[in-house]
Image (cartoon, rainbow, N blue to C red; front, side, top):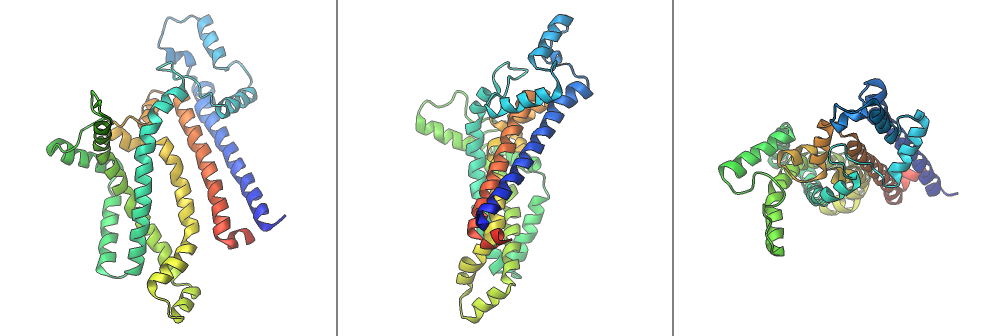
Length: 328
């Protein structure tokens, strides 16, 4: 078996172990802790104080709480992996159905912001590394530190106050007007109009961190011996940065992208809540405040699964791009 196959098998075992531990912790915090430790009876969520003991027992049986914990855990995992995320305590609807209603809005918002943040951040990081020590470099670092010191909800509320309330250029809430435009072109324009402020909030809050991180990665590589050799050969700085430094910076960048991808599905909880965006993040926040455990466990399971899968894909890509990884 060659080095690449051994490396991928070892990483697959590591990722599977991470997934198993995450599922155990999720089961413990969202199922065992509320009922067996805190004593929260599941009939509480039906908001009917007149339930008899027999009815309460039927509810417990419906949730499988009358079975041993190891049996509950096996059924719990099997249900999650087969797409049976349960029913919301408050809407009585399947969690998967409600998730699919909100998922497109979250994917559009978070997908767009993630792509823009990565592109702008990496480009600025490359420019900052090439112009390190200049006024452009020091000014951008100061502005980035200042912006990153603001909490995301504060930045969102500030944009909402200025551009939504005072100037009236953008709507204050929602993902589309009520009633929505009937014309498809006008509907898309209206949707993008509503998405502008939350998108601007996410990009503004994230681009500085990505730029500074990539700048430091580029500068670290620029001090290596192979860069000195490339300069001694007479290569210009642009060629050195693009063809040599960028390739060695790719592994940590790929890992960053892999960690960002699950957030596209789970949503930006704070931003979606501030702007009343009809997405998964806002739904997760509301479910958490209402102790709607099936919704929380469904969203968290999907995020955990996507994180493990995306990190394993990143392991494969990094092993192909950087042979040193599989040799280690």
